[in-house]
Length: 539
Image: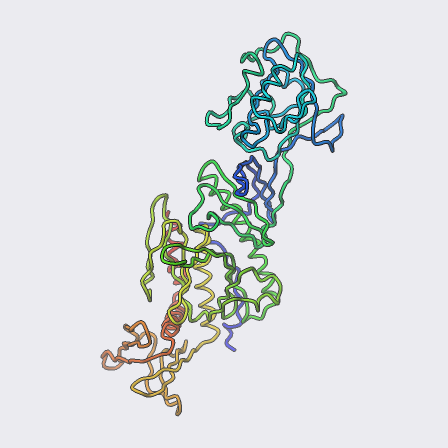
């Protein structure tokens, strides 16, 4: 066994210009539930191994029963400012009546027990959960000088029922969004829009319960082998400034929405970084128990693009792994040792060609790249598929995949180059049966000596050339190829025409051996050929 074959691969690291530290990050977002079509305010807390989604709730911090999920509050109407609150919603809109605004230093604010986002359950003992907006307004206006209301905070109140994301809280005096589809009944309840404090302000008793609005953990999503998707379910369209994170067990965050593209990209990059870091740790651990010839170079989620009929594109998630001599395709990540035998497809790395389709250079700017040894024309690609690559295999088959970030595309490109190089170094030679002028021959690629062709029966060498003597080639796209070699003595071009059962696999293998040969002469060759990294860095 050649010493090079015993070399264990280093972990595939990000290019220096793309290095991002492990993220711990917190921030606000909107959570869109596609089942209910409602959007909720949430806070995200990113840790090394978890993405935590927090939702606001009102909790009793002293003087009351912390297990009660409702509060009963007595409001004494003031001549100036009325009840000091506004409401939105109602049964006619299929949403609860919710406190949408609380006026600073007025009655509702002074109780310390009412909050924006509280759903009104009862008014003076009358259940209003199925009442219309106007019915609740009427009850509050005619309830007398002392109004007893029972409320419960809605952790998943639609965002349009409350103030814009990130608004202060019970002491806020901002106006509701003008674009709100529901009428904000504030003047009717207050009687006066003035924020002048009443002449005899009251304060909560020291014995009364004290409540606070807090962010509480609602979902803890493990990032190990998780995946991110920006696509709308069942379509090839990308969501605007939003994405979802899906855990290994299928638990989903729902759609996380952000105010700007920059904010969305920052979070996408941060979560992706942590997922990839966990994957690299898993690879490192697994490789300790694998033989040198069976090391994992890289693995991760991709989105496969399948043609569904004449127009529609069908997207399916796949998990790719570059391990040993193979490219393995899974429907779900291989966690247990036995899972590695469950690959739905396996391809020999020497017979695989990796091609980048489109590269993102700068905002609203595309660049079309074609590799210098492309074996087929790129098909039409949609602009909604920015980070795409194809894997070309035997018999002219190809599979189109995409990832969510340019940095992921860089990793896959470098991973394929490294995996193919290591496999060529390991096998050293590869032979294929072929025919020429009615004779059955054996065509051999040898890493040391180059090309040779021998009789399949007598094993006698018919011709032999070095890699450097190959000056050109052409093929019919089916089974036949013409290889043009330069005679080392008379410098004449000599043509060798061969026919193979699987011509594509042979051409890919020739490419792999030549690239590996050049890489041994020029160690920086692989990095220089990384078009993705080149343009990602220059931008």
